[in-house]
Length: 246
Image (tube, rainbow, N blue to C red; front, side, top):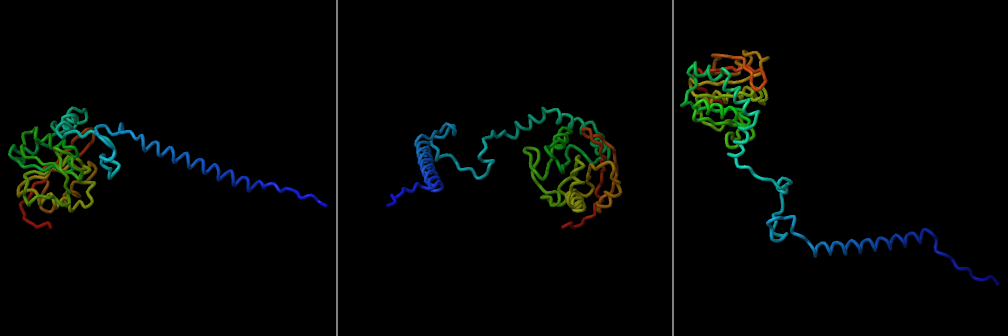
């Protein structure tokens, strides 16, 4: 008579039981840890807030970031104190562009001026320093308090609203998506007999630029150095022809 033999559990079956046991213990430990964290939640990460539910849920990553908002006036004062701003202002003031406009009687203290591609507002500040009281700066990105947002292809101003349209940044013209539209809008917004002073890259042929300005003629051009860059300032005068560019 053969005695019955006991069959030990196979190694794979034993491994599965151990894995289930370990998984159960890990899940229990995670649950206990989560309950502890919830019951001991700290509000120290939210200074000034009384409870966590009162904190506004951020809509974007920018909302979630803690940042200090600098008033426009203080930011402008800080910019004016920077070395780059001073260099740019000195370059504009010492250039012959303003002198040429005054000599042609196209710039005066009573002039209404519009600065295109104004950036942070260097030209706006320089024109005001020249005694021009009514100066507006626009760019694709606003920069208060000197520059507001507007598209140079669709200027939000009435016909003949300005005596002078000024741009000291060659990228304003060369970077325009539609240069003919840029020129047409500038001519529409300047008054009859007014001026458009446009900085362009020095390698550009002035006649290639002039052909885009259908209602103006070049009355002066000067090679200038603006903050280390060589540019050519073209000064157009509106011929007074009234056309609807829209």
